[in-house]
Image 1 (cartoon, helix red, strand yellow):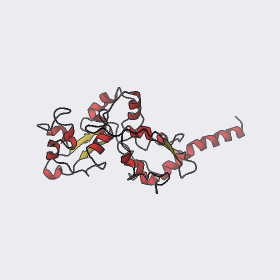
Image 2 (cartoon, one colour):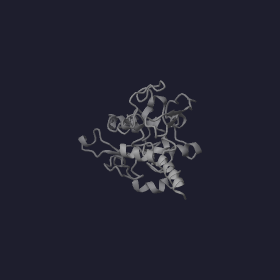
Image 3 (spheres, rainbow, N blue to C red):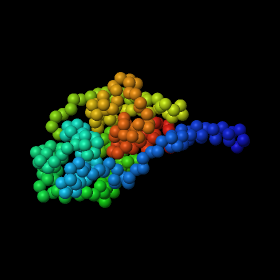
Image 4 (tube, rainbow, N blue to C red):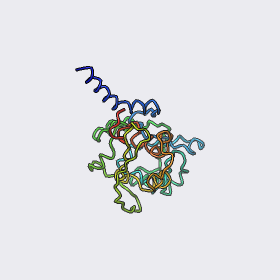
Length: 251
């Protein structure tokens, strides 16, 4: 290989790799827990104060059965952990967890307190390997491609318990230009998101519905849990998977 051709190849590779290197230098991507713990949380708004261990909740044990909309819209769980006021009477009356954990759809509360009030964020993580073995793999998060499985019909999570939501056929994929010239545009597919959440999950609180109407939409704020970071930091595939949103980008 001549000096000139070698220089051309080097410049070409630099053009592919430099954006990812610059991105990594500018932003500190979050460290990820193990796949079995990704999306796990402890619900402790009132438990510890009442002398009870916090409730452990793993999203991966529920995502094959229900879409995000069921809990965060229909059952009114706030997205921020610890911000929803729940007590045993609510559960007994069929609200929140009690909508399913009633002894019919899922185990009930009677004499089963220790199944939820474990105080252990890793509870049942030893079952994850067997759970995920037959599921479509991914690189990040739980290392499960949930949306791909839904497209293939491998899972058919329920989208409602009581009131069927209105159908939406909006499937437009948005192209979002990056502020940095060397970073390829991000894409946002409405169809995949509409399978899991309703339009009101994002609009108008997270994103202005007008085109380019959302101000301060930056990666720094996403990493603080705003905009896409509302879901794609803790439960939905993490933003460490740069190329999932910015096709053509190398990490």
